[in-house]
Image 1 (cartoon, helix red, strand yellow):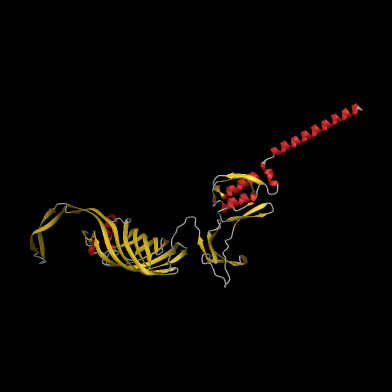
Image 2: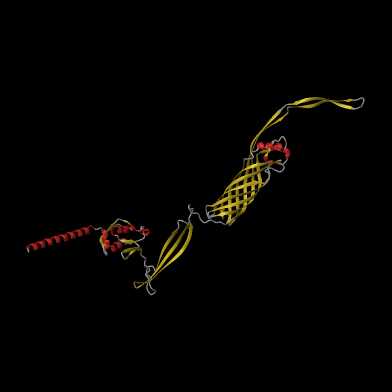
Length: 446
């Protein structure tokens, strides 16, 4: 009997120690469990602290430490700053209320998730028989500019949105709420790889243009009378036919109608080419016969009379004359003409056009030298041999770059030619000029 009691006591003590060891292990496991396990408890209390930061950082830390599911817009809450915060043993609802205090945001708990959203502003609108507090507005207007950007396209759409909210409150009870969304302004702006903030351009209307023209050309020689081949050879040796230059200033006034431009022009042009001569002439080195006396003999048979002369010769010595001349011949004209162009390609700030122009040029003066028409072809002033009136024409292509509300920069390249010779019709040698002209101008639209 004593053995049974002793066996029972030993068994009891062993069971007791086993239970005590299991409870101790459970307590140790419970103490070592991380704080995130508290999120499984309904309405737990937490201790939380954070330095001054944006609101989205605070909510992310709350999720990281206590596994609190918070839904919010990071783009909006990153702009909201909060001051440093610290608390001990508070419910999650109270912690969220403290963090959102002083902002326009609140939260709503859906299941185990907290949704952060911007809270509407409720402004009372009282019935007609109620006195309205002038300090409280009856209509709330929230202005917001929305930008819809498509990076793959070249269009930027901007919507100017006005939110109008009306709230009717009677005896502190909300009975009606109405929100109206109005899109007041909608406009589209093109996006370019390089942005130029230029104003809208005036495409049609009257305009004036001022241009500078520089042309490179050559002179083509012709002979009006084949008896003057020697004079033609002298010109080939003395005139640089491949180095003619023309400079000019051109003023144009006209009208632009859609793709067509037309107008009148007034121009000053100066045609320049080089006249350079080194020439030698010889005279003498021959004998000249001279009659000293004359007598006659009468034939007695036939009765004929024969005249006889007493001759002498005189030697003319050789004389050499050297001629040298270096001149830049200049012919200055005042031209009156007509101009037109047509736009081949037209964009918002750029257009490409083809142009044509005719002009009647009047000679102002001519400076330089040329050969006279009589042998031995001495040198004389150019002014007496230059043609007084010349007709020229040009065709070309150009571009216009719109640099302001009323201004265009216009570079252009054209072929220009004078009809006929630069000399008068009476002069036996003709010079005809062909050139390639480069123009750069500025147009102003009224």
